[in-house]
Figure (tube, helix red, strand yellow):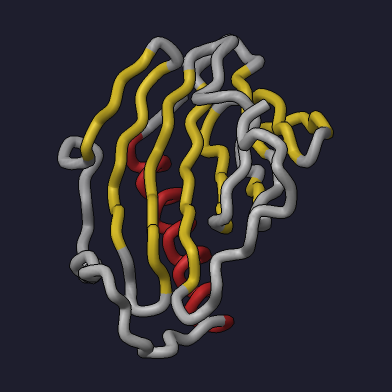
Length: 167
């Protein structure tokens, strides 16, 4: 059964994995940026009730942190509650690295054209431009946490081909 405590625990763990990985592997160049920089995220706890909610026919997404940190940009951390038989969107790809952690439920991963069973406790890491997604194939809500970002001080990986970004 989905619990806020378990979901927030997965959210915190995923944030640590994403941010620590970026800090250990990347450093900012400090080069001048012609566009104004978004405000840097600061240490905080965001509750389920305070997270920005987006509801759709597939379920609900709660957004916790968006912006940049000392070592990352384009940060997104969120928790999705996906209804049975649904997915947030079709398999897609983007330049950002991404982690997805399943907190509750089951389904199927789509990863680089392959379908793989998905269950509670699974963690998916996606490299830039690799098609990926998750679909709830169970009878109860599928709850997953996502951490997505681009590292500072590194060029965003170029688009590898001209295929559309969603399947």
